[in-house]
Length: 304
Image (cartoon, rainbow, N blue to C red):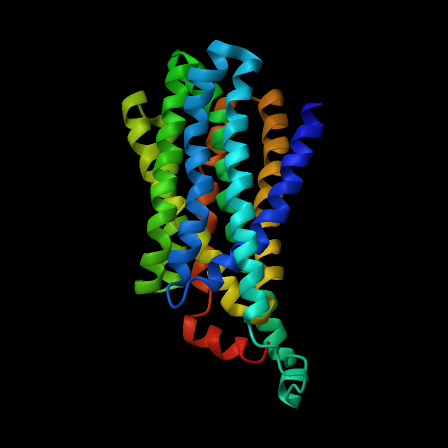
């Protein structure tokens, strides 16, 4: 039953995110990074509250505590109904696209453009891997490490995770506007590679310092996801829904598969080994150096 419930939640999430990302882009105007950040900060807020809800609602109330969360689901359904109707009206009001497409628009991208797009997408996927497998390791297993390493109760560990997720929510909100101002490549590089010094120190810090490091990790790491989505959308501007679905799907899928692998590693080794291994994942952020500049990205997207 738990697997079935998780499956339905996953299906609902997979339906929501690609089209919602298109809605955010449609409403964005010039501030596409800001729009994606605002869209994603809602989910990150819920994720940030999850550790506190586990510690102070589910632990005292047990399974019945889940019933309190259904009210949030009902509110979400109501909001989606309103937004979906306005979205349908907006689509209907748009002028019909011209049937006569120019010959240049009909042509497939040139081979060098295809290689450029495939290579850039592969780099972005590698960056997603480092980001979301690290987050999966922290949210899934850092509590066990915290209790074993510091001999402190679960509630203290959950507060530390709350600090990570809350800072991630703030980072998500700030990442888009900063990318609009300073450039997408710069923010992607900072958001992942900039996390590495803090993640490498985390396994060796005291409980108080660990909370500060979690704040820094969440703030920096999560500032880049909305930027990666917008970067990929600008690489393939005619396939916004496809790109959004691909990257959200990979983000959730890699996090899920990463959780399974890390859980197996923890069972066969220890929580300390898993957290130590995860601390190296942000080093993959050096791949961001290979991303093309926005000017080249725009030129290639015109042929895609």
